Structure formats: structure tokens, C-alpha cells
Image 1 (cartoon, helix red, strand yellow):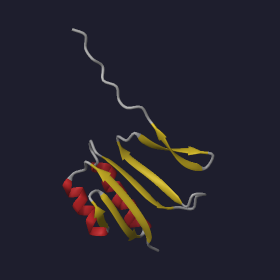
Image 2: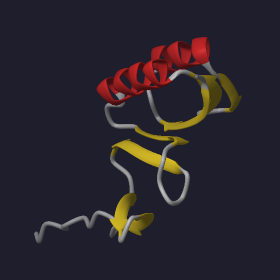
Image 3: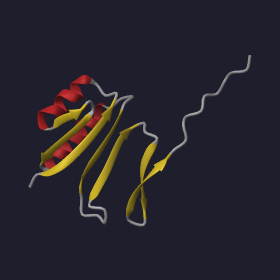
Image 4: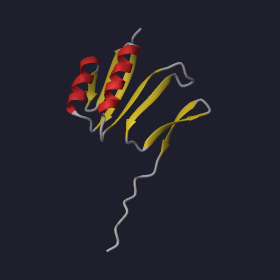
Length: 103
């Protein structure tokens, strides 16, 4: 049975955006929304996470959890989904620090 999915991407290859738009609608740049089966959703996520490269992606879909949805991420992100007593909360990580070489 199809269910709604939201897939948000940042700095991913154009060919991935094209592949995602075959199954979903790109409502604004990088945000894809659609109603697909669990099998198609899993295949889309596998393809996305395989080619995300230096970009980032997040998938949100219905799931039998207390919140009613699940979150999956790929690539480098500051916000990381973290389980907290059965609830998925977003944990903020520190910005990467740049070490300055002393001359």
C-alpha cells in the first residue's frame, strides 16, 4: 500500500534529482514528495544514499512508532536523528573546526 514520503536533498548530483523526480514531485528545489510503496521507497533511499557524495539527504516516511514516522539520513549533516526512550529527536553536532597552521 502506498504511503507518503518526503525526501530532502542538499548538493546532490543532478542525475539523482532526475531519478527521484520519476517517482516523486520536486515541490521546491531539493524537496521531493510522493506516495510510493515501501519497496519503491527503500529502492529510492538505497540509490540516494549510494550517490549522495559530499551532499546530504534525509528521508521521512510513516512508521509504526510513537511519533508515526521514521527518519533516515545520509551524508554530512549537523542534525543527527537520535533515539531517546523511543522518540526520535534531532541532536545538533558541533560545526567542524578548522585548525590554523602556525607559521
